[in-house]
Image (cartoon, rainbow, N blue to C red; front, side, top):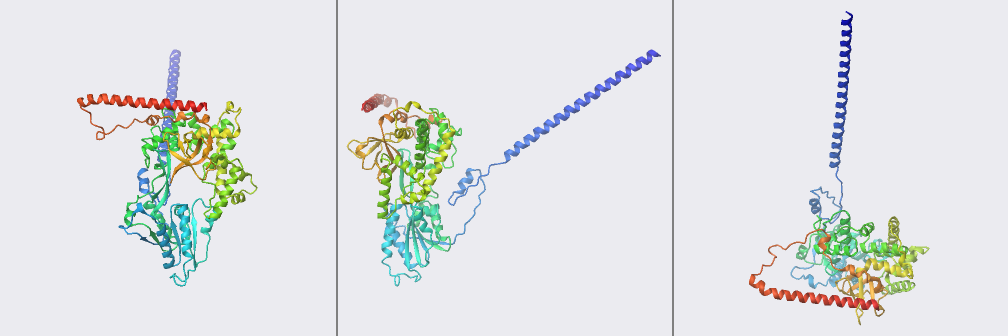
Length: 617
């Protein structure tokens, strides 16, 4: 009986242990299941979060009065368009030229503008007149003509609106002083009709109240970059239809108005719909470097909203390679990374970096800032005021020796900053105070960027080099592509960038008239107008640039974009010559190639002899 009781107790204990083991296993399984469910829930939440984040799109609002909204919408996948019409009164559009009489190639609209303006003044009701012309010279000429014509009016008999007692002619363009521009916006007596003669600034940047009549010449001055010659060409071109519509709208701001277009309706229909985008008519060095910095290797086949010309992209890549901002494979270099931090053209960014190495950053930064803003010098339209302003400007430059235009910009900046009343000083010396304030702000921004960069001082060049020479060395380092040498026995210069452009010093330069004492110069900008002029010039030594000129050698730009050179289509590809023609032409091709190689070799040897001789002198 005792043995049976022991066995029964052992069986119960075994059953209890088994039950406890099963219970523990069940709890463990439940715990694992709960952990798995939590993990699955977390994964699901993460996936949902990712999906939600993907659903959150960046919102960009683009606003413009002349924007081609359909093009933007299609480019961004059919984004919505919201049209917010302004309060515009009806405007009658009148074409002043018949289709058979209009010839835009032989257009002299100056006298036509004056005639239409005087007809409006003598025949129409009250309301100001806004005339659109292309530039300062045209505006001043028309203002003089209108002033003389208005003096001959007898308001008792010649003018239909008896409330009119006079006419006030006011010019308006960007290079005018702030005080002169303010006269346009000052109210005048209701019996005086204002005639505002303006550039396109009156259609894009400012609004003149009281305008009822608009005279549209149909043309505008536009800066266009020519990649083939490397020149900025300031050309008078027809406006776009969107600009014509915008000019017309200036007549209907407050009351119903009229727009007199000095061209035919057929000419209007031949105009392009929208203005040529700036990316298609300016240098693209900064744009290409930015794309390269964003990791976009093939900038040629990049999906642009308005694709620029391939030649402009290739020219920009060549310049970036010569600036050492990208290597032979089109990859951004260490110097390119430093240049990317500056909101400047790569050439000016190189000037900043080199000036830090040479220890003249405090002098170079204001110069770069002054080059980054509009012209600071006020050139009044009146003859006496213009002569007085020119005299004051010349005295300012001569105070620092009149050595270069760059030194003149630095002198203007320093004297303005050190003056007790900068605004008063600018007024006395015919300087744009608003532009100088912008230059001061840019100077502070650039110095902040320079302090952030770890650029080491180049102590090897400190010995025997003055501070002014360091400034010019810094300019050479960034603007070596803008080097020109004086032509012997002439007052012109020839660029050394491979285009061999013959250029002249601009009359506004402090070096104008001193060409006989110059040899090599560095310029900031070259513009093709009536003549090809160099702007903002500095004399340099050949020894400073001889090691930089080889950087301008040619390179395959397609490698810089990591893009294969396009192959000609079968239509453009020439036919394969027959065996007989191939044999007959083989000798001729060989002789031509040998002659070409011999000619190139002679040119290279002549260039080497010239550089060697120049280095000795």
